[in-house]
Length: 213
Image 1 (cartoon, rainbow, N blue to C red):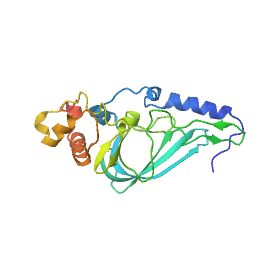
Image 2: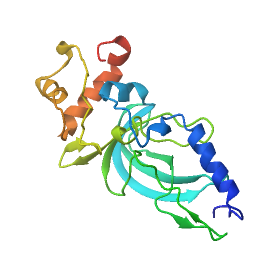
Image 3: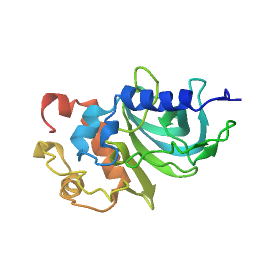
Image 4: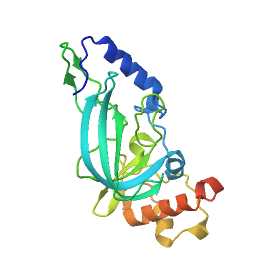
């Protein structure tokens, strides 16, 4: 299924190459730079909402360890992703360490700070651009850019701390509910309010025009 490695060196080389080639700020995986909503929108290639339907891992023929995630898209605010389509991407790292045919243990699991994915969860994902050399992809802002839905509310792995810090929006563009959401310092927020604001911000170019910053 996957090409077997007869020596550990190709795997080590691939790991180094992955960390160098990732265009997302991988070096900050253990010390994330806080990114607010305006920055996540700006940095995203695609913004999708849907249900995680498949999570697997493997080792590419190049020796690159990856986790492959598939999301059944229910809504999309950016990137031209079609509703009811499947969005599949590969993120750096394995789900868990694995024994290699040469007797070595490959411990290249998903690094700290990257988002974690589970089958069945409903998410909003701010997808960063795929790395040019490896094709690997993750969310903008790492774990900050993946929000999980529970009881109609959304929160990222940091309980939304910093998500709205410093975000400024022309007040005339906002509803009462959206103004209140942007004042939230932490905690889950209403999914419909959040996606409504993000959708209008993208469609009307708020970030590009400076109406959201």
